[in-house]
Image (cartoon, rainbow, N blue to C red; front, side, top):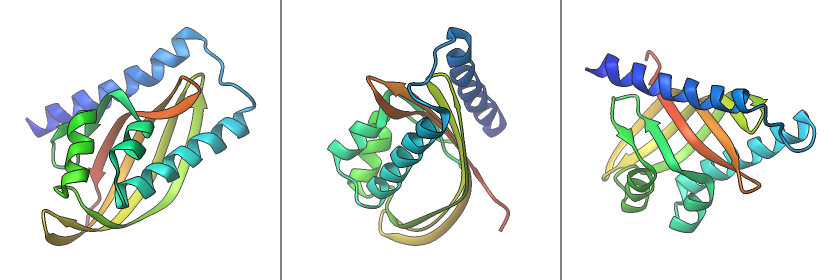
Length: 154
């Protein structure tokens, strides 16, 4: 079942990325400036996940968010934001390393390693996961459309 969820999420990420390619939509500005804008949005999301507010998260997350967690759970926009606000998902620190960004039309593929100290539902922990995110330009802003997390070997 877990394998099916991961494969379904990976397929959704791929379809979202390819949809931008099929439309032939061009990113506004140069590729370098688009990559910088995506990097800035990704950094805002990192900060918002540590100190979450509904307004900050809503501004960064697409209405159609599909977030596949490393444990197999899939979040929507509402459940992702709700869990962060309620402390069910509580990030004390988040460090992003090895980030790459590839802009394709109005979509961007962002890969990185996320290392964090957590306090999910009051239980301290540590996590290191690989992230594949698809960001989409919507109304002139980059929003997280799909994200897949894979836990790395300890």
